Image (cartoon, rainbow, N blue to C red; front, side, top):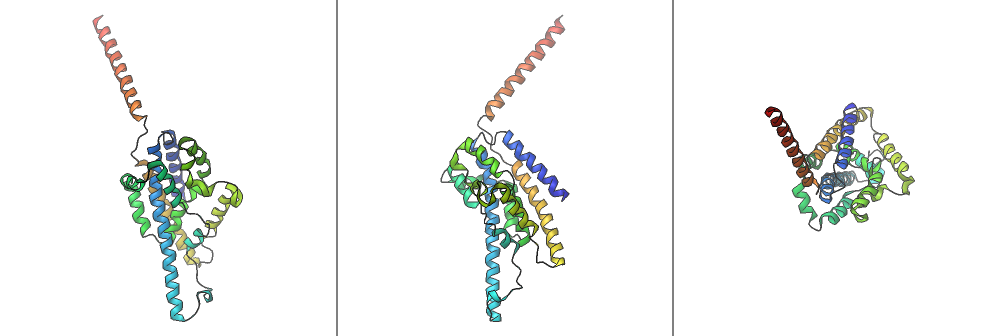
Length: 263
């Protein structure tokens, strides 16, 4: 848990630094960062659906062989992702709507070209993720939107870029489901109860896998945020200003030095 806490603290610092550095002052900067979380969230949600579909197929084959209904098997332990999906959250389409409005109809091509190396590594891991690894990834990728700063960030994004580019926050704002505190409690309770029904051995094994994977994915989150390449529109003017100031200081320094030497 110390590793998770350390990574989360670094991640929060990076997010705050990104905003302070101009993330919400430039459309392309925001779109690039949003795009990184879009591609990994899409990979996660697709993998979760794959695992659920595979489980359903295996159950149908098993029960056809055993000649009994799926409903008759009361000992079947649902996948962890099934419990998480039951919360009703899916962010892929929200990301897509926002990116389309920020970048235009060819947004997927742009995001493909902007996808960082850490994001690509993240996607590769998620495409073959286990049930427990998906549970860990959902904690990292869904959690901040649900219990973190999603609701607080929405008005800042709307102020910066307009109300039509905040679809990704749509399910984490408003009074529904008990408001922000209710959604937070619901999400936390889901993870507190995630391993209920597992044997002691399964509980310990899955818990260790989830904690380890949460730490790994949080590190990838941090690397992903540090790897973005877009600069705000005003960046070039800051560069010019810095060069002018440095030139002035150097000129003043050498002028002063020369004056002292001639005395």
